[in-house]
Length: 234
Ligand code: PEP
Image (cartoon, rainbow, N blue to C red; front, top):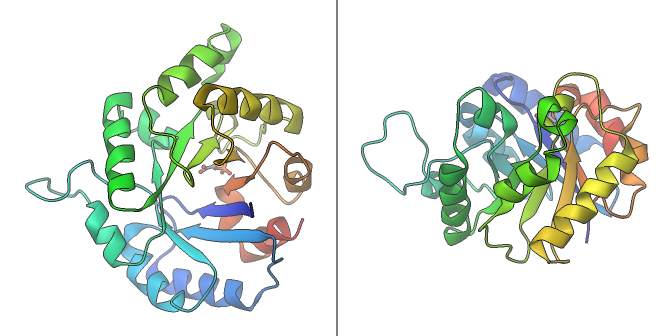
């Protein structure tokens, strides 16, 4: 299985900035054993999709709604993402869980609907610092994974909340241990489990070296083409 390196731009980059970045990325060296995916904001998906038409770089969206269509002002349907050529969709990113207050039950509905529309869900799971300190990590991860259909090809992103955007990454050993625990919970070998949380050019190779880590979800460092291509080649 190719390792997946995914760029989550969050609420960053205009259409012009997206075009500049992707044009540069297409010219960069990408090792054959890596799959690269970019997750621009919704407003840039169309432009990104055009640029990536004949490219091996995949396109993903940062979120979707759990209904196909209807009176849901401001929401985006999986059909709309499909139409734009998205291969992946992030589901339950910690910023959506903790800032936008998305609930596990809605996240699971999104996950199922993404599968129905043949979008590959990248389900984000992870514990807060408080939960880790009080020994609740596994309980939290289990409840985030409970009931999800672990179909072949899906991606789980282990992203400890305390490591996202903080500069305090998990160690490769901590991430590896969590990845094998997640694999045990979902009892599937054929899915990719990627790590996210303050990945940088300085630490990326430590993670990619680990057998249990099938790739990286990169936030802050993916906004800079130089840093991101360094990570891809690390
Ligand atoms: C993320 O957005 O999923 C993420 C891990 O962010 P950062 O790399 O900035 O911690």
